[in-house]
Length: 139
Image (tube, rainbow, N blue to C red; front, side, top):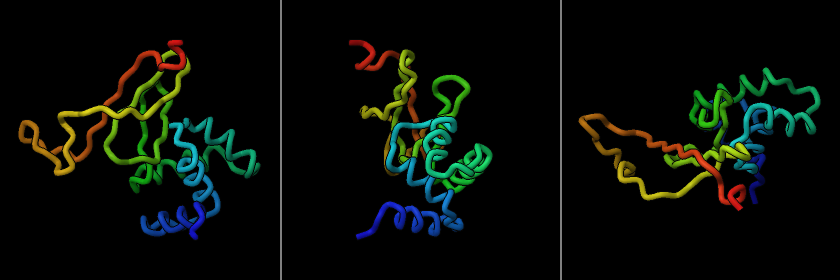
């Protein structure tokens, strides 16, 4: 049985990246914690396990992951970027109260796996952002 770490290593190798301990740890964190974390959240969690890791390493790793399409970056709740390991086209909801980002499932008339043409433009990705109050905060 493959562990998450072996899976992360394989994913990094397939994208042509050297599977360093830091890269594997960051990818594993994102894969196991699909909470759309910011760099600060990633740093605070990973720093507990790798005290020598720097924010610069995390920023550089995430920039590399973005370039290789291993993650998507979301700027939905202000200036801070959130990171999502799910790179398939999907929509997000940002809660203005708790500042959490959630994946949401909606029927999007523009999304089509066959990459439709819209006004002559070939759509390769679809992203939708919604902002408001999440169901937990609304109670």
